[in-house]
Every structure is written in structure tokens, then in C-alpha cells.
Image (cartoon, rainbow, N blue to C red; front, side):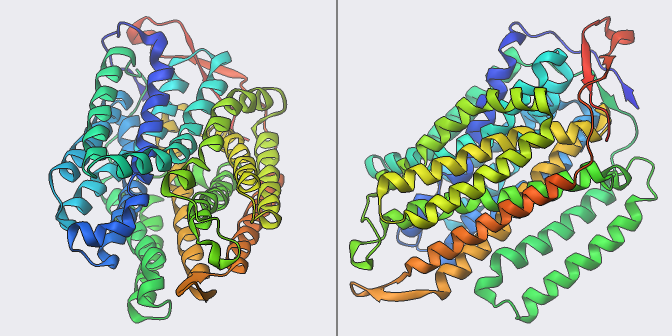
Length: 490
């Protein structure tokens, strides 16, 4: 199933893990960069609030579409090459946002930034191919957690920049860091010699794109359009219809965009369902924490915190995720990634229990948010290990891309749910309409339920053994003798 392609050896491949993890953090920061800016976008650009919301929505759409597609392209044509393309899209999107205040240009730039989410699954695939077996779990744990780390540090960074500099500055900075990422990848990250044979499934990619766009548009915009409106219902029906036709086509193609037979294996299918639920549970923490502490004291529960202070509430969680990545890897190595994921889901549920009862104290809010982040760090570290256990080594990029996609879909459903709850449960306080404390507590309950469901799904996963076999990457064509791990499918 694989073929080898020679690649020039970089000067410092021992730094590859640090470089790839840094790329993941930067890409994740890009996703949350505009969140503190959203309330000011209509004033700064003359756009409507509905148009401004697309600065977040469009990154979700393009990230969902490009992640599995670029993962598959990386498996076939070179993961490092496609990684560089993804970073190039991030830089191009940053420059577009930096040079314009027109809402259309900003949305186009954010669309390009969203496509760069493919960096994470591609980085995981490179690490699996390049590192010795004993280092794979810890490296993949750090790379996967980079998404949560970046999300946690992105808000305070953006808040500081917005309060102290002209708002375009943050896009110039993000573009410069993206360019630095490209140079570091060229210098330190080797090209994987493992390739999947066959032709790229363009119809499969288009079908997947159409189904995802219809689904995510309905989910993210349904609150504004109305959940029973013809447009929302039509998109949902179209998504299901396209998915059915696409699935039938994929089962007949020799080299499909998504190998549905592999994806239907219980080990892989349940891992992707768990990823969706974990993505939902984690995202609620990011969505409501800053907003909740910024609510005025007249609400009876708000703390009237500044933009910077509210963003800093998530920073301890980001630090915790960095520290827990190697811990999660050790748990997975000793007890298996299934145990790690179950533990993580339980910790997230406990974190929301803390948040439910401690909504009036800044420090206890931070503590609860940090507990949720700790569980997320362990979960995000375990999910790629479970994916790699169930798929051939030649499909790592596509499989991890699909798993990352499921997290994004979970986040989309979470965003829609949180928006609906906070909009429906309101009262007037201090002359303005604000969500009730009960609205925030209901969000915590829903997120906790998602975490418990993830735990149940994890318990249903079949048990599998850790690394028991290896292949020598490109040993016949490149002369390498270092082994690359292959996880047994459960």
C-alpha cells in the first residue's frame, strides 16, 4: 500500500517535534484570534453583526473541509509538502486580513486561516512515520494537545493586542509567525518516505465537501435563520442526501477519499464518535468562560472583568495542557489509550461539576476551567493513539484528519447549542439584557453530559494491544533501517 519517495535530509531533524508542536499551537491561536474583536467588528468595518460572525464561522467550515482532504493528499503526495501548503494558506490569510478592513476580504482571509487546521493531523502523521516507537506516544500527545493549548492562550494574546495596538497588528504578527513556521519546517522537519498508491479521489473530496458545508451551515446559522426555516431544513436534508450518495460511491472506489470500511471498524468509529463528544465538551469551556466573567456585577453573578482578565482565565488551562501531555502518554503506554480517554472524559465531567457550583468566584471559575482543560489534554493525547491503532500506517494522515474533523463538528454543535441557550434564557439587569446564571449552568450540565457520553462510548470500545509490529520506513528505496510503529487494529 505504500511507496517511497526520497527526500533531502534536514539539518536538525531532532527539533522536528518542537517545530511541529509550535506550528499546531500557532494554527490553533489563529482560530480564536478574532473572538475578542467580534463585538467591535461592525464599528470597525461597517459590517452587520451577522456578517461579522462569519469571521468565526468560515474558519470552522474551511477547517472541516480541508482537514480530511489535505490529510489524504499528504498520505499520497508527501505530508511535509502538504504541511507547508497549509502554513502558506495561513500566511496568505493573515496578510489579507492585515491589509484590509473590508468584511469580504476579512472573511476570505479567515477562510484561508481555517484551512491551516490540517497542520495538526499532518504533523501527527509525520511523527508516527519518523520517530522511534518508544517516542511516538509522547510526541503525538504533545502534537494533538497543541490545539487545546493554542485555543487557551489565543484569547489573552488577542485581548492584549487589541487593547494596546491597532487591530490589524495581530494579523501582521500572525503572518510573520506563520512565515517563521514555514522556515522552521523547511529546516527541521523531514519528508516522510511513506506514500499511499493510487489516484486522488476528486469526486469523493467534492462530495465530502458538499455534505460538510450543508451540515455545518445549517448548524452554525440555524439559530439566526430559524431551526425550522426552509433554508435550515433544506440544508440538513441536502447534507443527508449527499452523504448517502457519497458513501455509496466511496464503497466502490479503489482508492477512496475516506475508506469507509476501515472507518466502520468499531475501534475507529467509536473513537471518532468520542472525538465529536469531547470536542463539544471542551469548546463550551472556551465559549462561556470569558463572557461569563465579563458580565457586569448588576447581573448578580458577573464579575465585570476586563477583556484581558477574562482571557487570562483560560491561560492556566493552556499551561496545564502542556504539562499533562507527557503524563497522558505514560498512561497510554502503560494502560492503553482507551484508559486515558475514559479518565479524560471523567475529569472533564468533574470540571463542569465544579463550574456549576462555583460561578461567583474568579479563582474557582479558573480552577473549574483548568480541570476541564486538564481532561481535554489527556483526551486529545489519547485520540490519535486510538486512531493509529485501528488504521494502516499508509492512511494515518487521512484518518487523523477525519478524527480532527469530528472534533470540529462537535465544536460546531456546541457553538450552536451555547448560542441558543444563552439567547433563550435572559433577563434585564442594569438596563441591558444578559443571560441568566441558570443559562450558564445549563451549558455546564449539557457539556458534562457530553463528557459522560464520551466515557460511555469509550467503555464500549474493543480492547486492543499496543505496538506489536513495525515496518522499516522506506528501507528498500532509501536505505533507512529505523522502524516506524504500526498499531494493531482492534
